[in-house]
Image (cartoon, rainbow, N blue to C red; front, side, top):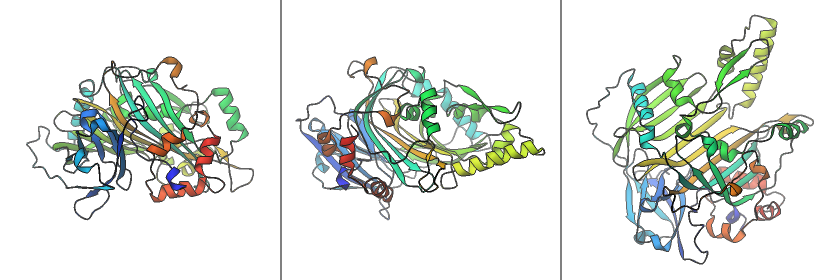
Length: 465
């Protein structure tokens, strides 16, 4: 029973305006490879005619809830490198657990306008950036999404907090300032907070306010924020030691300009029957992949890793390590960097997927690993430790018609300076019971164990409403 109360990792909730009593169907399934039955993570499972869909989790599992009125529509499953699977919902809605087998798609390469050479990657990315206004929405639209945030302690890697919500995101398109976005929280629940803030952390929050991770995760979308570049100056100890740094992930354009960056065309795969370029990029402290449609140059998928080494940071900051003061500064940066790396690899990670609806690409899924607050260490008495935040946002429904959307009013808008830790909303037990399922991956079992040794999650949700 306790497990059933846990998070629906990827659940569809695009139906808040409908009456609770209206009949709905729930489709549970798993996406596998046709050969070897290997789970396919991050496959998009949806009803294209309705702009509705979910994403399979790390073990290929998904749950899709939809109104009975959609029962005559088709289900579509698509993933990079595989043939698209389409079936009538009426044929599969009675399945207890639908098993979907995806076959690899091998396309004969058409004559490429851009031949593979050292500059082809830059040329493809440059063309994709030119077409952003054509490929992505420039008018008001609304996204209904499922948000999850897990907090993990850096000293013993135990999970200390869980927060989940169903939100509406109202956006005016990529031409508009990201600060204009509005978020409305429809449903919300959270566990106890097992990590204790330090006195300094509480004072910092009171003095300078807090940033809301729900807005912050949207600010990690490289496509959405590309045209709104801001730069900040980070100062290191010592006179005149500072350097310009992007305050958000405005690096799509940066990797075309920086002489230290490389962008290479390394492969051609497919998505929904069309060729997709795979670009590999690297620039100081960062690397990853970008997948771009070869026909319209729309960006399907981005993987970004912030894997800064202390040597790169010292070099970028211009610190003179030949002096005693410089050595001291370098040692401080080395210690801080090594402590910040998650699993010894990353300071931060981003994964972003986009779906194409009615000729436009919309955000489909984004996950973000970042450094969190400093808290009191549970291992070392009197010392502090950092935390890691695992944030994910899955778009369940896209509403491109402003006449049809329930617009987010200013008084309903989530405060940008209100931490998700401070959000309070009545816990709707019936709602979560009807629409949440446990997709039991090893990581999620660890979250349950770490958070429920004193009381069940349901008790915590009720207490923290």
